[in-house]
Image (tube, rainbow, N blue to C red):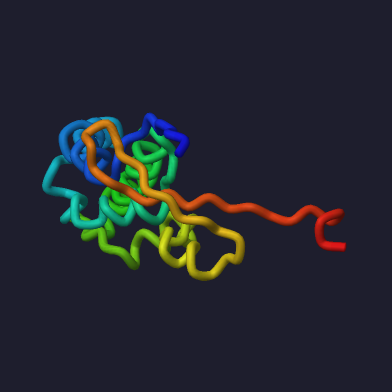
Length: 139
């Protein structure tokens, strides 16, 4: 059996990085106080799962910045002193979800194979590999 390594952060690791570093950095960059966007960490898991899928955290930080800019705009306009951010707001600010869950993808697409992988922390995850038939193979 062939072994492959995938150097990437897990969802839990991305959540911790966002909680410890990215949220504070984006609060400062957008001129917000920590209490002004109410409950930013409750929706952070949705950012990771539905709007970012890269190995690192660069796009995650961009998406957090987009939501905080929206909150800062509402505060600057005087329509609110504190902005509550929830899942419905994410769809309004960032648009439709960009990624489906892996389980939904696995069950809805023909030709997708499932395989286990171990991350550097020796935790097991499942990888989905898709194949398509070329026009020559179909005939």
